[in-house]
Image (tube, rainbow, N blue to C red; front, side, top):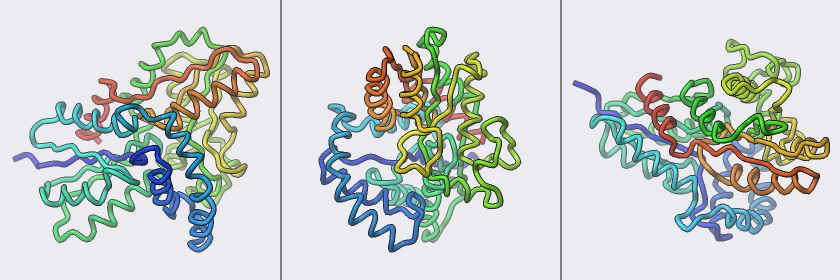
Length: 337
């Protein structure tokens, strides 16, 4: 007899709407996570609740309004589509659910639903290609915090990253092939940034910038280093697409201060424009669906930076969204990882 299995797909989260009050609620939950802002409790509470959330909510609301569609948040829209498409690809022994680490649909409510229909096996799959404590680690911690209280705990499997999965890489490559890469002066692989201190916690006996992971990936020491897996993802994609080392740059976006991973994506975009590049192609491999960081930050803000400094055209490679190869990749991850 086959096991009754529930697959829980998880992503970061989205406000209920772009209204200031809803954005404030989302930011409050997100930024109070100890893994997201990993500083002492009291300092985090003061920084987040008295400074960041009160002063940032209104500005963030305006940005979310640029992202929002008539059907709502693209992140949630694609999550629901992926859920339905993956359900069709799996047999009747599988049930696919979606939840968000922050806001709705909440992990607490979705896991309560799963508990009522207790499966033999629960597969938890965060939609983050590269592991980071502040994303994947936080998601697993929250899931375990809820599940550990169950009277009956089923077999639980965690899939913690998939940056090297051929299906994931090929789906990105397929999206990139919609464009003639040879027409572009330069290619940027832009990943969400992290504080350097969080990267150093992965290998506490050596400083992040003493590593040579930007040149060579060493699975024995680098497999859970976010910076290393970002560079390796880029190398694998460049090889697949025939992009030479000289033609691409790996960079990091969405920084909060100067002590985050470098180089900074917005500065690279500006630099390339000032140095004469007219056409840039930008990948965002850390995100599997359209969201604020892809559609607005890269697609609008970086495009403005590029043209302001002399560039002509900046093109964003579309996210995986509900691409058939992405659904096939998720199926393979569920069945074979």
